[in-house]
Image 1 (cartoon, one colour):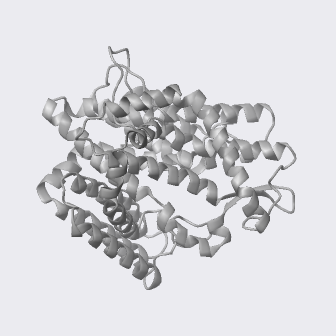
Image 2 (tube, one colour):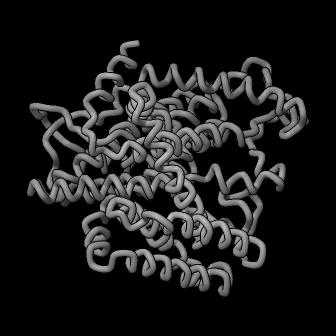
Image 3 (spheres, helix red, strand yellow):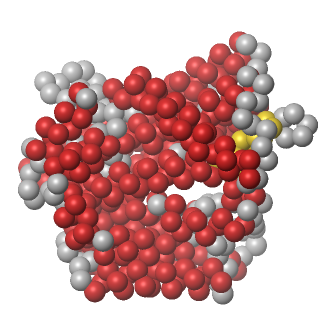
Length: 444
């Protein structure tokens, strides 16, 4: 009850001008990611006795439509744009500068992820000492660290906030059209070129154009440019565009990459994700008045505050809970892993697994929630923060691609581990300060 009492205290102290719906969307989007991952995950024991990991998107094509709801990365970046707009404007008013502003972002984003990386590096070392398969532990770490791809991209978008906000102030909604146009041109080149061509390589720039465009929508929301009928227009254009792009166009139905598919809408990101964002954001904004009335209640708002106070840890550790408990079930004689994916028995067992993974996550939170606030200390110079953040982003991308543990020295992959540790040493705060850093809860 101590956590609930603290949440109530913070809820009662909330300034009346705070947009509580931003915090609700942040919390809900994280929870959708967590339970979406768990719902889709399908670890099982094959006929030859080996443990395999797949998901329902690969097993049932009819499930691809679900990703129009559970692929909520656009909501993440949208909320991030709103929050970054507020904090960047506040920093400019105070004259505190880019370095101080960026320090607050990095504490909230990087601080909680370092323990996760260290834990999996140690697990890799332990697995090697015990003689376990490097491939097995490597695959497990890759599955557990898949969520960090978002942080890798988001760090890059956060570094560009002074530029993206200046672009917004100069062009307004035109900045969104500009970025969306760049994404569309790169998609055109992608689909008209052969694999391995230069156009295909350029398409990776859509990590910047697509997610920056969604981030700009957050600025638009902050400045009241998405009010009234524009919300319904966003929803209709997004939904209609999705239907046309996936039925008549070259885009797959699934908004998440599916193993074996020749084209993924996420790797690299495609223009269709902007349509997905328009559909989701327009719909959510139409619900804003109703949600705000509900959030005016003390207990409802306190619940949102409570979730946001642990949201980064929930996001980062939920796949670790799944991997460790599924691995433990394998060591216990494949307990609960015998059902074939999407079979009736598999669906009956799914609620049991999701409950077990939820309890496992609570245990992990008890140990690692303390890192949620990111610590304290003197900010590093801005140039060091930028260099460090870029190094960390590269390391996180490598972790999401192939994990941190494996058959390398001491059971780790130094190529992925070194950039993160080096980036943290270069860019994170040093020494002590009189007060801990503050900031909004969640990845914003």
